[in-house]
Image 1 (spheres, helix red, strand yellow):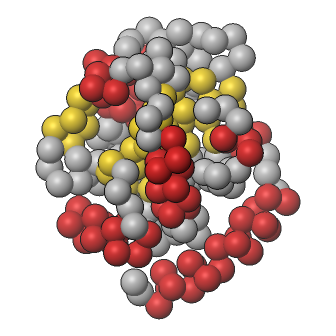
Image 2: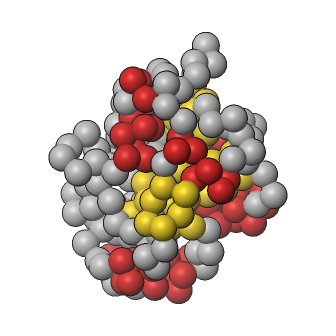
Image 3: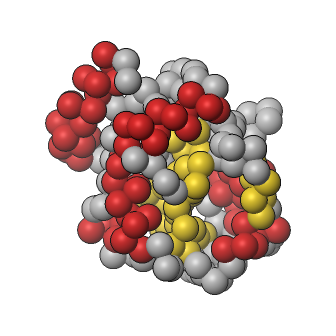
Length: 194
């Protein structure tokens, strides 16, 4: 852990408190109409951080919490909370982190460096993909194309606002909620939707 990462880890509770004061419309989105996707998320796959191809259809019947992560962000300590969420709800919820360098170069490491950082510093055992593009740019990963294009998911056209945006897909493969980075993984706002 770099000195900056150690400082961020120490400062995280303050970051969450202050960011809570400034929550806006990007903080939470809901599929109020229960719009069904035009393409099934279970038709997609991703490459894990250890280079294994994983088909999302393996998780059909469980909820998915898909999160764009970064190792050098003010919200990085949410990795620990995501792990606790994974431990608590592993029978009904699959947590998958998608490391990305899309926001202010806060994920510059290699896949092996990211994997080691997450395990050593935050005890991460939930699934991580290899490093991907999550924003509406060239090379956007197909999972994030699905999450951020209403022509695929049925209602949400918004890309992540920052690192640690969380997308909750129900057991039927419907994107039901999008939580901004300021919504902690263990917050009542998120847990009440599981």
